[in-house]
Image 1 (cartoon, rainbow, N blue to C red):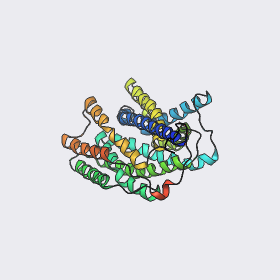
Image 2 (cartoon, helix red, strand yellow; image 1 turned 90 degrees about the vertical axis):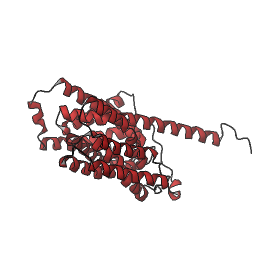
Image 3 (cartoon, rainbow, N blue to C red; image 1 turned 180 degrees about the vertical axis):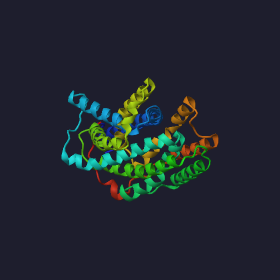
Image 4 (tube, rainbow, N blue to C red; image 1 turned 45 degrees about the horizontal axis):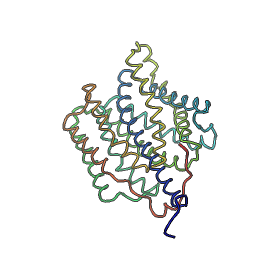
Length: 324
């Protein structure tokens, strides 16, 4: 009984655990790289092409088109549109759209660091929702201290923000509320709606989100931007944001299916140091040194936050595995 064969159940479990860890690492690294660059890309896109709704239509539409085309060519596995999947994913699309639209409107009026500070503080609320709705334990002592640090860092940043603008903070508060709901519901959808592959989730969320965006853009009269000359810089900025959007959609959904909602937000927060460095290098639209100090406190706390485990009563439930 002491010598377990390599090909036996224990060996198979070890291989499965290793494969899951590798997939989780790939998903998190890919998401972190895309997330750190996407924030700057979107800021540049709406700066040179001031029509956030149209920018998002191009991003989401191109993502859905590329995924569907690759699926039809047999390169990847993509789910067909089915009402049984469209129905639950309609709310996913609304939550997803609400998050990215309020994100890009925030960037229109506030600097990148303001958004990052609020982004870094979201685990405070998401961890509670994780406990209430998704069967996680409450954060431990170390993680609770990290959440307290996030709160102090966010408050300190707001008090010393030299570029304080009411519109920017209104949009970031709206974004904060939508984002916390988005993290929980999208995690719920990733765990409960059976898809053939991760690309199916990408296709559904991006395609369905395009529909209300068209009406939103028309209502805001964003088509008037075409009356002015479209510069090469604007085309390049929007094009880069579209390419990053395709990659980020895939890695974001893959990561959501492998880690908790709170840990997903922490992963997104911890990579923002790259965003801060790029933002300070390319132009002068950034926070003061004191503000950056509070921002780094937020990022440090986000880095040391530890994911809460599943509650014992929830560990017995097995979820179907979705191919990459």
